[in-house]
Each structure stands twice: as structure tokens, then as C-alpha cells.
Image (cartoon, rainbow, N blue to C red; front, side, top):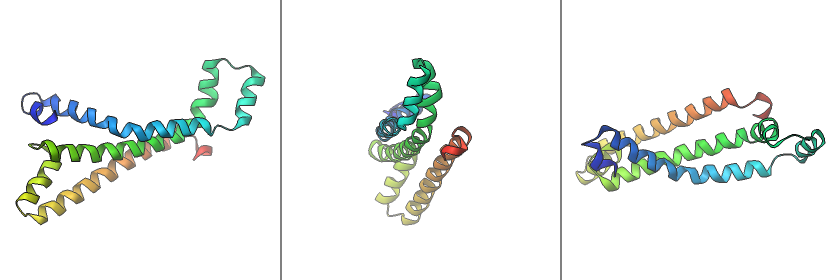
Length: 144
């Protein structure tokens, strides 16, 4: 989808890559369920004693307890999405770093492949560090 729209509509490539981002959400979904199960029972008992409403329970107990796990899932999801984008570009062809690698492979340009792999690694590292940095701003220090 992304390759045939990219020539006519600049936003077409972005829409195709947005679809690829969904593949990383499976790991994120698993992390969310895991985080909710690991809320200490004491927190739930305190919520019952204080008779917190659902919104109060969400904002004061559930969300703060799950934020570290949510960011772990986001880091995994971003990495898997980056992998899916490169793989989709290899299959679809025409544009992107995946197509560049595939074209270099077909033309036996090993040095181009190595450069592209280093580029993929650097971009993946930057994306991971970016999500990690946002997590340090959002996650309370006692939960790190």
C-alpha cells in the first residue's frame, strides 16, 4: 500500500507505515494485561477501604501502577514496528530502506547492505532511547 501511494500522495507512505505500527501493538497488549495482574493486592484493599470511585481508582492506583509496563510494551512495539516497516518495504519495493537493501542484494553491493543495516540499527536505537527517555519523564522514580 505504501509504495503505490507514495508517488501520488506524500502522506500515502505515512499511512502505510501507520498500518505497520499495529504489528508492534501485540507485544504492547500483552504488557498491559501483565501489568494489571501485577498490581499489589494492598493497593486494591486500600481502594476498597477508601471507597474510591472507578475514575479515582484508575487515576490513583491502576494507571500509576501500570505505566512502567506500558512503556516496556511501547519499546517492544516500536522495535517490532520498525522491523515490520523494513520488511514490508522489501516485499513491496520501490521506496524505503528495505527496498534499498533488496536492490543492493540483487546487485551484489554488499557494502551498501552493511551501511543500510548500520542505519537500521542506529534508527532502532534512537527510537528505543526516545521512548525510554519519555518513560523517564513519565514514570515516577520509585517505580523505576
